[in-house]
Length: 381
Image 1: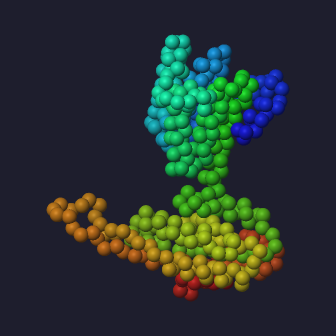
Image 2 (image 1 turned 90 degrees about the horizontal axis):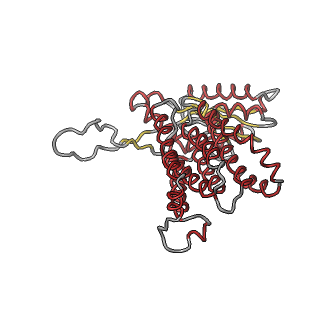
Image 3 (image 1 turned 60 degrees about the vertical axis):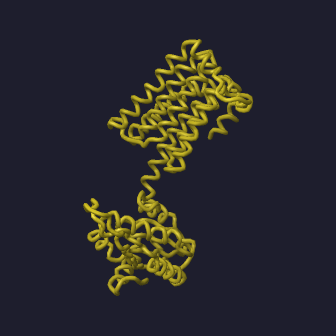
């Protein structure tokens, strides 16, 4: 997207670009802020409003130095935001993010409108060498922006979310806009692209919340229903259920139950036969095998069942009290190994006259019931 914005700014007439971006980029800023507010993305809300403020204040100035200084402040503020987490706008944390970001942008903005302070900031020499010649930025801009990008990059690595990636690309857009080689046309295009990236990051996050299970990382039931609608020809559906799952929760707590679900999900995700795994709900999962019958899928499903059965699930310090007892430290508590098994029911489209996916799914669920009734830890058709 950013590359496309740059190419468009170079190829299209300047008047056309300014006419298009002159109005629509403000709509983009507003849309990004509205989406962020509606979906409780406080960091995107602050970043979108900050982008609009940068465009309004620095973009209206004829001094590129002002844009460079205020753009650097924006990049740094976004880098600090990236280290926090999203909250509701009206929550205490959300309000703190808004207030702190506003102060972080307002105070330097006031200082930089004094030409003396602005010149001192841009002429600051912190390192020897040709950093400015290499990057095209003053040293202060290059160093502060580099540190902010490192912070945002770490957040992408740590949380791997669409919002984190969106914040990084918005920083890149702003840095492109404040580069000395940029002009008014490219500035407008890049700032608008930054707002669009923020809006899309909220939409991508919302999509992931609807179609991906947070706990296991597998596609969720909604994604399964969508994929079933697109099925045709021969296919097999398998329903997988964790045996005696309620006992794990009742005896060891829901935290251990969550770990069991993650363990099973990892094995299903690596299931052989080029299948697709889904979290159906609760302790149930679904495997979808396009292009093969249940006779062909049975060997793959047996391998899945064995891999879960043979996996080691160690509950560390399972009988450790919440608070350590007084007195001398005692030897570490014995580790307890839990046994996890799954029951699997399967059905294919060949057994259904019209190949209706919901009918196949129902028959796989009935086969799962037979597997559990027959003693669990088995595959049934």
